[in-house]
Length: 246
Ligand SMILES: C[S@@+](CC[C@H](N)C(=O)[O-])C[C@H]1O[C@@H](n2cnc3c(N)ncnc32)[C@H](O)[C@@H]1O
Image 1 (cartoon, rainbow, N blue to C red):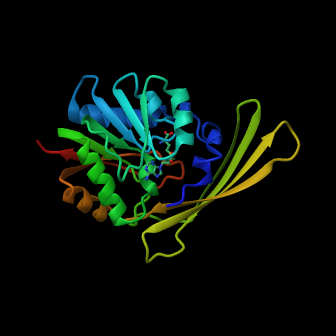
Image 2: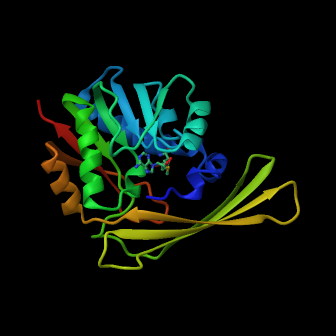
Image 3: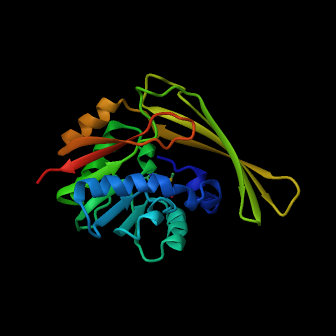
């Protein structure tokens, strides 16, 4: 699995591309999903593939977070925004912290898993870190059933020093496999003049909803779903919730 440039040498661009303050509404759906199943309290939560910790930053006031990501560059961003969280470098398919939590979350990072074996491994990780009665929540970007690509997106933002623009194009080059590709161009303009243009490729998983449900059940979860209307282009989202029955 090769990590996109955005999560390596261009990780510093993540807050410009997807500003933390824009996650407030989305994070509210995660808070509600946790509260609905676990009730009130400062539950112990593990987030895998936490990225810059943008979504998490709206939830640390409610819950006690521990977080992990495969990219040390992204964790550097996440630490800056969430100084009180304990972070670990690790792959969601194999990391083992040797402790359990009330909830395990994998936000959009689950999209980077492209085979059923990857999903099995990540679900086993979630299970290994949950107490009985705990919940695993994830939100795949795409489902085979509703994918109607190509999808395009572009926007510009600035922090007053750097102006950052991205164009993205998501398509399915081979409908017989379980992946989609997103081509991305970043226009980075520092100090006036012309922007420099960087290209990136993100490969994501594309599975039918029935595969997600089947593999979650195989991993020992009772599957529930919450609606998740967060995608700017209007494509359907879902929060998949796995309850580890006690
Ligand atoms: C879109 S970013 C997550 C952004 C995050 N939701 C936020 O609010 O800032 C996707 C993240 O998934 C991470 N990732 C991809 N594959 C991974 C894996 N196998 N294990 C752990 N992290 C992974 C990447 O390093 C990247 O930080």
